[in-house]
Length: 127
Image 1: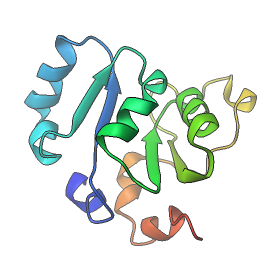
Image 2: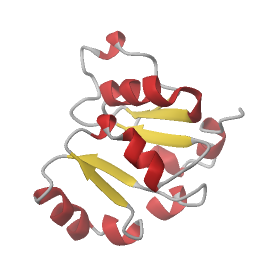
Image 3: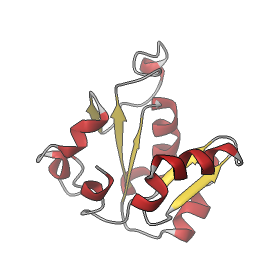
Image 4: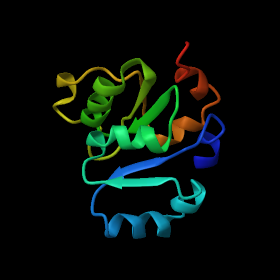
């Protein structure tokens, strides 16, 4: 799946959590190798967008997450240069606070939906 996403541009894992535990978890899962080491770990990733942009400059970003609060926070900063993709799966999928945040650009039911042949068209910034 990560290789598939990488066809559109470099895939970067942007995660938050324990700065000791997260790197081990990402390496053990094989994700570190799959993204060729492009992993950024912050305490609060939505507060580190300047650093993300400095390390991985791009005209347009796609942010895939299961937390609509984070999608909304990043969209408020990056605006039109960001396409937000909400994965409606997992713990936050039916969060009662969903209506309090801006609607994501794209909603998918499960992370595997990024493998859809239509996915690149869904996230096209010009589309």
